[in-house]
Length: 338
Image (cartoon, rainbow, N blue to C red; front, side, top):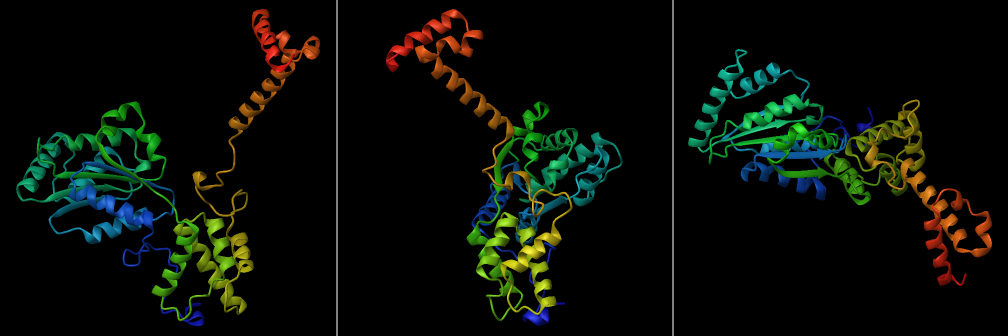
């Protein structure tokens, strides 16, 4: 709708992941290098985490496009499966037979891995949204790796998901799986500078004739409300361009961004945009920490009063501490001139 108005050849902030249009921040470059190394380095299990909307799926698609022909790939992006459904998807991806018998499937899978090894091929299993897996299914996935013969490190398994995957992996039942994870990486959101570069990158790829469509204060506000999350940056920028078009504005300023954020905010949502909990203001102190700090401060004040001889007749510590403890505290008062 607004593409012609702003001189674009295509929509710049499309929400659909496009591996052909990938802005590589420093963290994304490192993450992609880690994924590639997980394949060529034969590292077995790899765990990649990142908050919602940080670009994990786009990175996976970019990786897949770069894979060579001698890699057999199975990618599962809906892990809410039963055990039989999981084995059925794996079998279909690798052109194996699944007839509901796990024992027969494992024998066939082991033969498949053996043949891939002798043909100098690799086998890659990627599970996106892995934080939604059950512990039972994670254990089944680990047991799949047991089919690899000694010295034939042909199979790589990537578990990719939100940070909730980490505590899930912490289950006592998954100790053996954790010991097999050769690489772990957490994908961070954009910095302010990367957010600016990302917006320019998107405008340039859309064929923009001018790149100052978003004012500097608008970009600063976009970063503030999105916490550097690419998906949210796309949503806000797309909404802002539509608003700017409807208002006849050639340039998007902070006021337009504020209006868009208010329209995008869900009723009852405490944050301006739906960002992950660990992307919220790090200055916010958890209630338990605040209570602990208050208790320590009160005890410190009472201890200080106990060190002053004039205040001892009114000391609350005398009602809760043993007399021997109080005597030791009173001895310390000499160091303070008491």
